Length: 119
Image 1: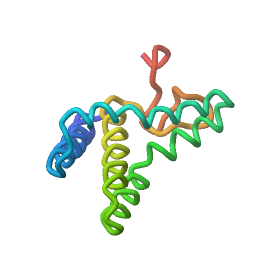
Image 2: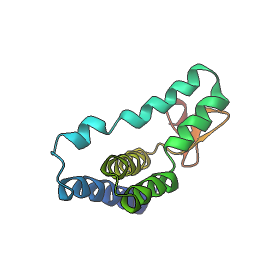
Image 3: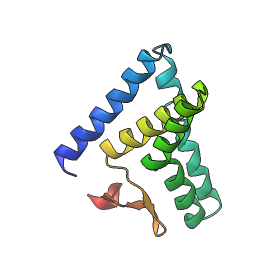
Image 4: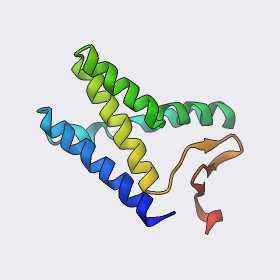
């Protein structure tokens, strides 16, 4: 993956962390919530298609922004935080090379193959 894309995603991730601090949340809340979006991988217990759909919905940055802005509009702090965490998590994943999933398997992403077979 391109170094510039990794840097861009790192910037988004850091910006999300700074936003949580700016909004007055404790420093530890961000890392405590950061991996909750990975619960979406439980869809893979059913099958690859359900897993890919649930994973992609939760890891879509557009959905994270919709939740974030809805939280701002409706003045719901929990929704703002949810949007920030979803956006930060997807940025972290993309920075590490994990992209949105194809139905063919978890290792097949829009950023390329991941895992031992991809090497």
